[in-house]
Structure formats: structure tokens, C-alpha cells
Image (cartoon, rainbow, N blue to C red; front, side, top):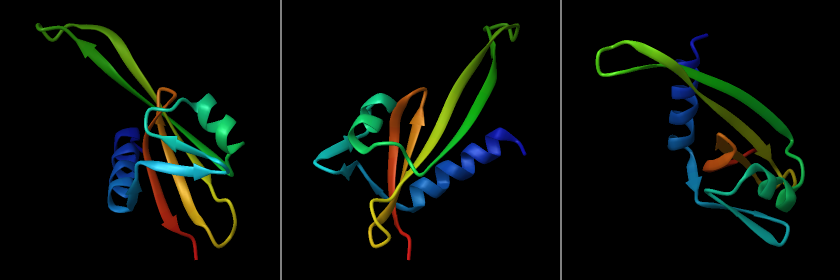
Length: 105
């Protein structure tokens, strides 16, 4: 499967879901921009982790390739209890870029 299609689908799914800017974990809040370390410290380990990597060719103004840019995306899934929202936290290069909340029942 083409990684670009997968990331585009993931992005669309996150945009169409109930998007929030913060997620409550125990006594703390997780915000966009937080690092993976901060999220795990506040919320503990996630129920699931999905990791994707997107690489693209870098070209100069003359269309001559000079390197490869690589972004790592991770989706961490959290749910405090069966009656709570199912949260998906999207990381890009180790920082939260989106948080979505969906009912799991």
C-alpha cells in the first residue's frame, strides 16, 4: 500500500472525527505540541501504537535530487475505561499534531 495514501486516509479520518485539542489523562492534560515522553509520563503506555514512515525525494530548483526527507508518524490509542472515549493521538517526528476522540460503543 502506498504510504501517501495511508497517511492521507489517516489524516482524513482524524479530520472527520471529533477532533479535540486536549486529552485528559488522570490529573493531567495532553496538548498538541507535547512530546511522546510527556504523553507517556502523563498517560502511561498506550493500548496500541502504529508507526508509519513517509520519505520524499528532495530536489533543488533545477530538479536535481540531493537527498531524502523522512517523517515518522505514530498513532497511539488510549482508553481509560470501556465507557470512556477512545482517543487517538497522532505524532509527527515525536510531537503531538492531532488528538481525536471517538465513542467506542
